[in-house]
Image 1 (tube, rainbow, N blue to C red):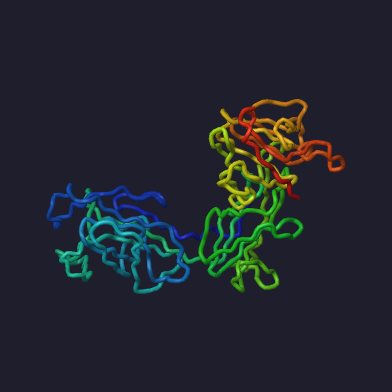
Image 2 (cartoon, helix red, strand yellow):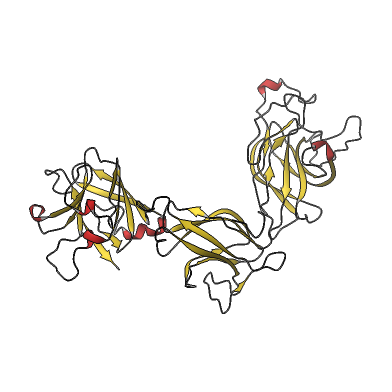
Length: 420
């Protein structure tokens, strides 16, 4: 679907002068072969500059170089760049920072002026020659001090940097759900503390996330309820967090607008790929401890891990919600297939409802409301229909526990708690 604003990320395009590389790629390390090296170039460490994408929100008169690897003491110099495709178009020197021989991370280079949005820069590695601690490179000199470090092809070692200053922006697209409780915002940016919220058709906020100034691509938000089948129309809205408390109060926090004054309030569709097998709300990752215990190690989305009473406990109690769809990844299915059951005081009195790896008929496995799927280590089911029994008849079995299907693994039993 159309978006309100283009992405305004700060892109750091890392490249060797001889050949640009795609955004985000690191340049291949190069050997220094300049004439004042004084040693066999093959004995020197490979050298590089690496810059990563960043967004300038507060300090706009400095640049961060993520990694520098230098054979000898030197400098990282930053130049204004007329064309990102032509490192030879570097002009005004904006700043320099000394680096030691070896590796350096997060080298901050202070600049002589603030940067403008969309400005291109060139970072270049120089030698400290003579080693006087003063950057004094003059490109017009016949034998300049502090010359550029060269790669094996005799080209300067460089990185091209695009500076971007964030403004309020929001981009959303229609999406097919992996989890019915998670949606993804293509990009969001703000120059002030912000709140990103998802509203449903009833104007209820079903997700709110605080944002620090800057820009984020592919921002996932966990919803407080699943998206029903076949799908739902949602609103993504970007608010200024006026009181900076991280909580949305629409009487205080104001809806932000784009550069043209349009409210950042965008509609998108969230749908299921297969309504007969909807995306799960939660997936549990499960393993085993010998013949003694199931271990529910985590949940995805991670916000639902608290449904597990203790991720370190043997056979923990797991809370499930009525109407929600679940997936369980049983990594030990070949040895410990998983049963869903109405849990009794003793194993012999359990009522088996569904079983991984062996069909039961009739059973909740055949109930379309349950939509049971059994695929290798993964089982999926909706907590509905026959799994909930009959609310007017306590004698009808309903889901309340689990166990290993292997009879002599009697200790591998635990409880489900059903929550509204």
